[in-house]
Length: 342
Image (cartoon, rainbow, N blue to C red; front, side, top):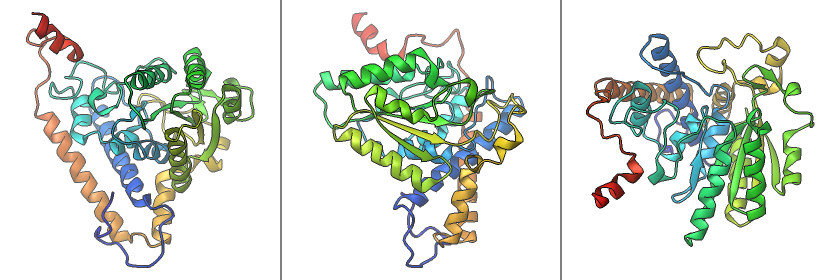
């Protein structure tokens, strides 16, 4: 958690809107600064593959990672850097993966967004929409069969991914088996370039919760306090043995689908909606208004984060890429078994 002695912090008696508000803001700001750096590297031709940023979804994502504990399962998607960082992903591992370092978690072999750490409970993302839901359900069932207790699994999905068969099958079996699952669906109003009215006909995706046997909640994805309270409560309910949880957050993706996309299909009317606010700017404004930090403190935080990002990128840039003829191509998960057999 962000220390209360952060430079520039005021000593007013006003209580923050949530006890972890400043911590969450730091994860949001870290993500924004990091992703701006990654986008710059991509435009400079230094990143192979796509870059998909979470501008506009940082509040939702941060809340997804902050309430998980050791032994939990987290399956983030492409716009969940804030949640990844809050869950404990080292910044240098992010830089190593994007820049193809052989020292990164995927050893420079996989797409930059398909990274994870099985040991810490963060699953590597599968690109196919909705596919992580059944994977998490299977992981939770396996943990139950091993006699583990007190764990939860959380995965994210976009509203476009909510329309796929894998999502339906995963949500259904999770409810039937009553596993401690939390699904956070971010309705950013465009599945790539497809608007909501061409994706689903129900008035609100949270209405589906009852049909699946879930408990459902809605949240304003631009309001950090709401995200922390609603997502935190959903994690607590799942951990306490309640039915699976579906949280639907409303926001707007404030960038293209990826850095290759100019988002010209987003209408001006949509951009004027309340859900189109920038969650980071809204959070920073509240911090100043409630005197949780002053402008000097915010500037210091940003400078500190920028230095951390630059250091991680510089480290990764100095490291070697994998050499195909020299690599051990055995999967990490089977190396011990192979060595034992041999």
